Length: 98
Length: 398
Image (cartoon, rainbow over all chains, first blue to last red; front, side, top):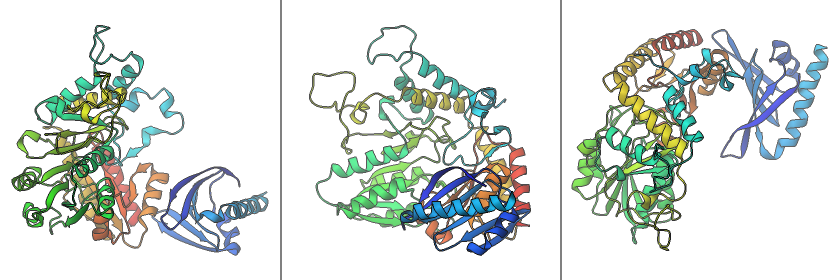
């Protein structure tokens, strides 16, 4: 699982930034299971759609199972740390699936 | 009448390279209308491909003076008088800043301003910046229980120091339209200069400025007038109360060190947005040809249908079930509006707008500042699209 592209989606008045990440493959239930040990995962059903939220000390991530777009919110000063963490998160999942 | 829309004309070209627009249901028209009529796209292409007429000269026969044609179209469409009362700007925000700050600049001492809780940040922020600088005091008139600003409440807010009223004509969250005739009369009778923000009404409902006492009326091109982003403007009945904030080239009187004071160049400097004005003019002609006998009935039919579908759902809070313009803002119990917008957009290609819609005051009252999902329709939406959207939302909240 890799990040194909990212862009700043919005900036909040409290200094947080929201980035939109496009992934090479859709978020799956297996991916959500794989990140449970790294933070808190919660899901919500909207009709047949499953929305998820992942939160840890560094950032929170929001998206939809089956979709390639996720939104990540973090403090601006944590940008580098978040990038490293995400590479680890998505990289580990790739290894798990290979 | 066949509603020929731009993206169908362009289907085989670059526009559909990345996404399948055939299945897109675009309900974010209160931000920018899409699709545009084919005549608008053609007008942009023509304006961008032909040489621009030199101001004040006829070097080449047959070329169009886009600003002149645009002003005539505006004057006719909004039933005003002299076309030179119309000034072109970049958008409604630009217009409101020019008018509000230009009016304030003409006053040496602080004065009182009346506005409403319906305002967009394009009004709120300029007014609050003037208040912070100690140049104005401000009264924010709330809406009544029916979601309207009563002319009486405006009259009650007037004090001996009141010089300016900035009033939202159509709200971008509730779809409520205010009585411009009555409110402008109340302000005019007390000698209060009035600015009406018509961003959400221009092109949606018939507006006859000659029947009002409005001193200024602001529009933007890229919403319901079906123009492109980057063009807007305002009507100004008498220019003297507003000082111009920009000076520069006008194409004539170049030897003078002073910027010309006459309308409309008093507020225009630099090269105009010719393709934008051409698009706006084409959009106005499209609306005029379609006619206000057809437009409101189609909008009302779609709006009524979606309002009925949403009202039938227990989990849905619809903030104005009977809007004057086709805006349906809602929340789903226990669900973040951003989540609804995300699912609608990503799963179903239904484009809505979530959040505060740049209108924090009315959102504070309606949603405790938490925001909502807004669906806004244009004349180019269809009943079939409304049925699909009704089914999708029903499925989501079931």
